[in-house]
Image 1 (cartoon, helix red, strand yellow):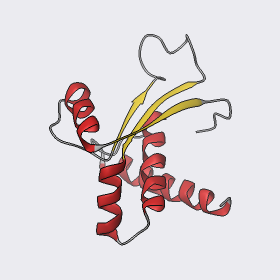
Image 2 (spheres, rainbow, N blue to C red):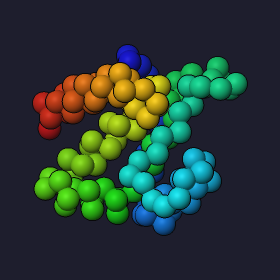
Image 3 (cartoon, rainbow, N blue to C red):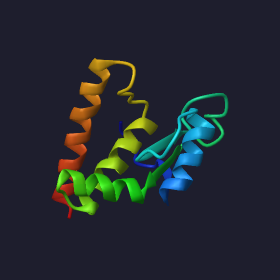
Image 4 (tube, rainbow, N blue to C red):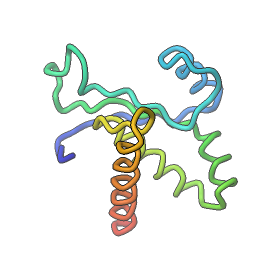
Length: 118
């Protein structure tokens, strides 16, 4: 996962905005917490190889989930951001249980690393 020169964009939106993106690009109804748009896949990856992609987070859903989990909004946001970044690197938890476990472990590792630099 080493890519020190990698670039990504982060977009923070509300539930109605992420619901539109969810429907348009994933054909799923309603809001979600995070969507990642990787740029390291497909025909044009060589144009800007340092460009990892875009991470979109719904602050509305992040807030609701933080309240439900009894954690701070900051922590929930960090979890979602890391989750989105892992998707940019090709991790996928939806189609493979083993891959989901690997993604969960990597997420915990990165969150621990973030915690050390706060």
